Image 1 (tube, helix red, strand yellow):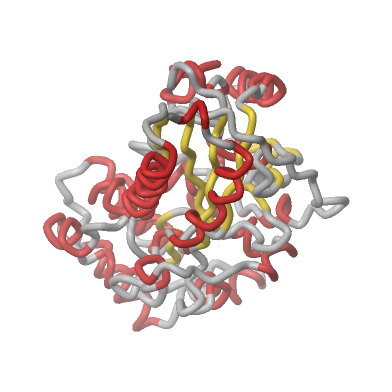
Image 2 (cartoon, rainbow, N blue to C red; image 1 turned 45 degrees about the horizontal axis):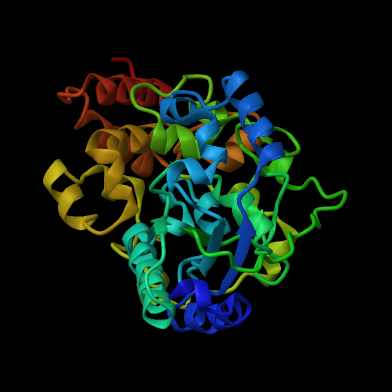
Length: 371
């Protein structure tokens, strides 16, 4: 039946269907990505993927959608805004060494299932409208160059920090794809509008953006706190500050984010477990059962309790007087606050995890406490 359908008409109807499902934008792209494939291969050859071995395992396949879903002709890309405008000010949290900073995308419900369900409903609507056709849904669930496909679908351009940016919405959004065998008319790719701006490069706390459009994931705080298992390199720990899950600094300084759109979906807009205002000590006290219970339905739950505690131990090690640090001193917080930090760290000094013990020892040494 799909063979007899007016694809131009279906493309126009896609906008309405996507909007009804909570997507802020939708676009269609051709699937050929030769330049992006070469960029990916150079990135892998440089070792910038770190321990994300799945990146190299999939290799070229990541840039070839038809190898993921045979018969694929187009990619339908969607965007869902997630900026939690009801959350505490991000800059204020980063400036308070006693509070935990969680990447804004993870304050609400895990977007993976939410977006995947919405994309599936979009596919169901299309089937109802035109009959059966071949497709496959992706939301971080397979080796897809989602930013390149979204750029080609007209949803934005890849900025110098390697995130996708939209003129009308900044970069605080999620992406998803529907690979399909429908010969839909493709939208025009988006040209870059970063211009001469390089605000994101010096904003990166660890210098992970090694050059425009080049990210060394091995230095990226999102990689270090989420993807990396085991020990965080000691030289990078002081640079992590109070960021316990992900990092938003490159997006916080991006001028285009003055156009950022607040999350429209209530489960992305709501902050769970007061993660926008929680203190490091409070979160450090969660045992494994509390972690699982409190973070059920959260993207954070995927890292597991050990990495959660490891990350907070590093942040507690960095929980020192920022004004004193600026003046060249490493003086601690007030005696009362410093005592509370040390007491919290001591509580996990003999943790069953050697990874946790190592990072707790480091943190205690940062506070001048011998172990």
